[in-house]
Image (cartoon, rainbow, N blue to C red):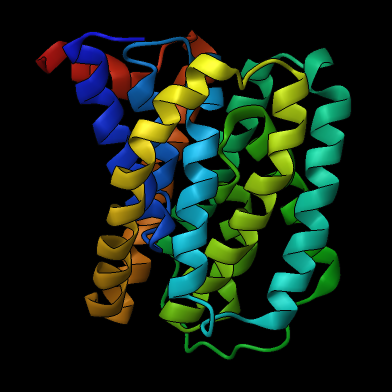
Length: 259
């Protein structure tokens, strides 16, 4: 790994990682597509996972008092189940199938959120069964493609959580699952000495960027924050569908077109 092109892209990916861990949902989902400009997607996923894990520690500190315990407990169980399923069967399922499924879920849900008439939120206790279902899917897609955000948000967005609580619960849940994923990724050979050396260089950049994400979350108006989440979900869902069907990352193709 080397060359100025690689390091420019890698630094951008590290910043996106940190900002995402700071609580700006879906920003982190852009990391692997961006890194895929200069390396195979699987290699990119293995490279960035240790950076995710370190950034998670700063996100955990920032949101240590801002989370919903019930939602977090359901998330942890569901995400763990999903990662276990992913480790066991992912190699038997074409990755493009998972990618298209993930994109369809994201697009349908985000369009529903954007087009339906506004209603007064009446949040209640998070239901266990839907939470386990969607978080299991999120754990599986997180293992396969580092893209657990869309299924997770299908469940959590309608819960009516406060902005900081929503960001904090998401940050803590995915910090846990990223740490869990280190084990299967290591045994699958996607984390090695060379990738760790590069990750160590990127870690301080990602860690510093976490606090920018936290700053942005705390200053964005509540309605604008969730609008941003929903539009991000729609754009990334469409990108995933395109990638799954054509085998080409639309975001990467656009970047190359205008580069």
